Length: 466
Image (tube, rainbow, N blue to C red; front, side, top):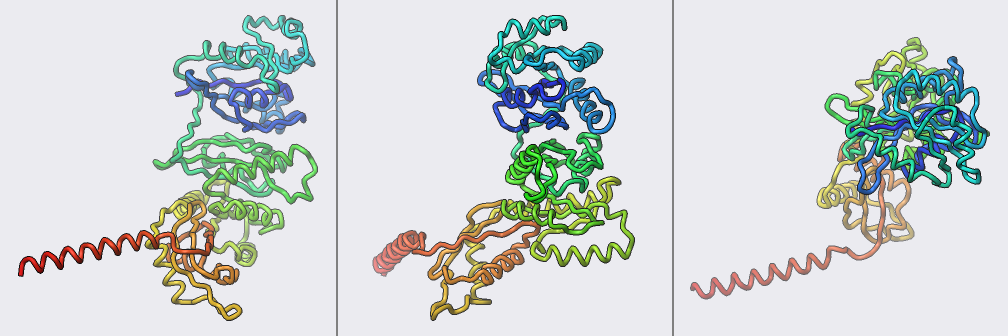
């Protein structure tokens, strides 16, 4: 198990910037506004020739034990108690504060190994910045600038020396066999509550306040012998409704999570049906071409009449994604989770299925014979053969002539035909049309020449044996 390092401190001291510097990524959301990070965020620091370790970014401890601030502080303390080493991050420009003193007292009670990191010291006298915090009594203190990577190498040397060979904290690996699932939707539909219910713990901060989740948080899970990576994302709203700058960054992180996932689970509020914001999120998933499962949350709170009305609304508003399965769930009580995972498995299997050129070409021939393309200006498109062009989404490359005359209606016909023939559920189907000669014609000529030579040898053999 990899050792883990937790970053702890008050809001806006640069913990997320330090996280990005240590992991050499931009995975953590960074902004000048305090309180951007709220949940625990995990990454891995990999140095050439050195053993890797897990880095845990936490939300700022603001001194309050109520509401979101209290939940954020609880997440930070839990990360510190699980870690093998804690980096106590302070602001070198603002100096020590009463909140820093309070965090210091808690760290001493926690009895965890601690390194003091004085951040934002670019342009300052490093000795003077360290002297400001000398009363904290830490022998190991470092003046760094996370934004400019000043002092990071020296800090890494000490971190590696202080870490044990085997860690005790939570480990997130990068197993490519994991099913990557992103939970998306508009604010306050229960995404974090659902992830917590699946994990069986309060891993994400869940609140009735819309916009609680700001960053995209990934958690690895093993369930019924299968491995998953669950990505809780920030709620997406229409661009016209987005005013706060940090919310714009949250939307970018959500879009990145959609691009990186294999299956997107869009959550809808059963009591509100399909809104314009939901359509905006659906559009982002379709643009990325990801497999899709619709989770209708808060289903248990509806009456029989309300359920009938919601069913009719869903069938009408989601007609353009009829291939996506809709599952009725309750994230709060955990009902419908088994059906949800079954739908996820079917969507993932369809999106990542491997096809052969022979079966794809045969399907194209049957579709063409059943319904040829219409005549356009006296010409008919010829669909000669097809081959697979990729997965997630399944992509089919069709070769022929006059393919520019194919209408969008005929393309939808091919999509529906292939989806039905190959039993593809929960995934879009993409077609790429290419005009030109058959790239396999030379191979066919070579094969025919071999057949001719074999036939001549057979004739000579028969003549000799007469």
